[in-house]
Image (cartoon, rainbow, N blue to C red):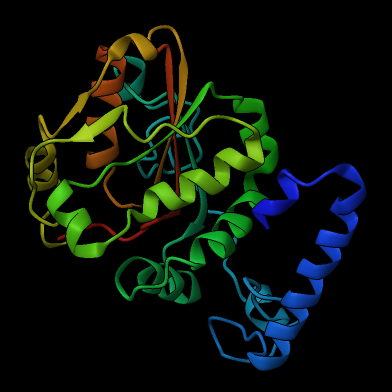
Length: 256
């Protein structure tokens, strides 16, 4: 409740009590359910215990800088070590499969922006220590082209980035990296076509805000990494000192 921020201190507890009572009233009218299986749960934005226990383990066997699949976990593959514009770290909470894929698809395409809190919580529970160690200066979402944003009505990556920035206590910056080129949907393209599709798609507004700073770049799904790498190149050429990528899930299967 935003009124809590402007009330005198002696009324804060009363306002919080009213807010708590109002939430309990809503829960009685609309009992919270698990967004995956629709079973009753104790609070909103939570999975039931069965769904929570069924979530897959952390993705394994990838380059810890670019996310590319490798035979074993690597601190940096050859391509990253030889590329000054490579991503500095790559973090993933889940493989893109099963229940996680269903939750993300609903969040992204079926008008469920409220799932950002649940998905960010699940991500945070797995990666909290690594993200605190990363300690970015700025949290930046992967931008949508304005036409796609008008069609979808919200940028799912910005919602996730806002949740993660709040947990880290770091500023969310949504007007720094923009997508000025309208690209074809990446899901329909193979790895080579994906790289060509996003080439030159991004630009930075007022790069002086970026100079010498570290960035956590947030997106929902990582497939080949073409989109994220194109954004990383743009950020580094504009002056970013370090750019790390955070995605909810990584696709393990090779594209067509």
